Image 1 (cartoon, rainbow, N blue to C red):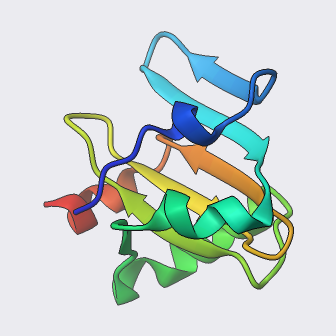
Image 2 (cartoon, one colour):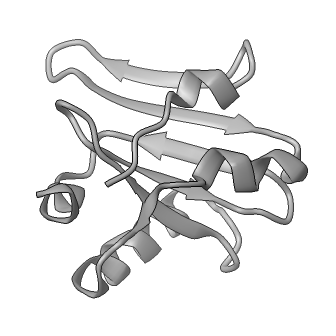
Length: 104
């Protein structure tokens, strides 16, 4: 499954919620819509079983219904990247355990 360095795409000043006790992070940022295809290139999409969880992530961060959720696998924790290609708004979160099955 795909890996990216979200920090490569997230501009300075992006909003980061960091829980140092659990090593879980949520990063909110906006990139130029033209950069979205490069950012998500090589990332896997979520499994059918996780579509409702992905919808909750989109709703939680008030992204549009056009947003798509991608799987970002790493050594740990894995994460989900929700991104709206129309306006460039994105959320990367490692607070979602449901993505682990997609990285397995």
